[in-house]
Image (cartoon, rainbow, N blue to C red):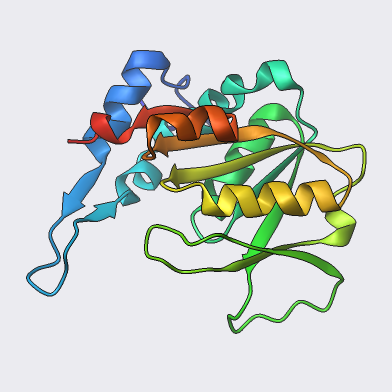
Length: 198
């Protein structure tokens, strides 16, 4: 499987589906113990982006979770959301708007609508923002990320979307690592749960 060049044309494999995709995602994922200085394991999702089959499969699989909601825009938080969000946007045939975190080296010169997150799994509060011109009042916005643990960033992005007059239709994630009520509360649909990544 993967890309193959024949007669100057690139042929790609069809995307992985359902159980095959879930198994491949779990196999490409790793937990690492950073040592005595840390009280938790660290996730490594880099295998997801290294595999051409997974790159071809993740966007359509996440898009299919919300096909019934007819999203018109995908919004994803930096950093890993900038990888997975465009894959989903392309699969849906809609645009992508990056949500940036305040306080970095990058300064936005556009008008930006910001929202503060509740404390995340590390106890941090962040400010996430999207350029005003990228969300229209008619947009049905799908939030996309690779991993949702507390839903803090998802909630902040729902707030940004609502303040711009758009409608958040839900969140598609590769992994839902939150407690069971989180999925219903956030309209969160995922390909995997944390229990799948042992």
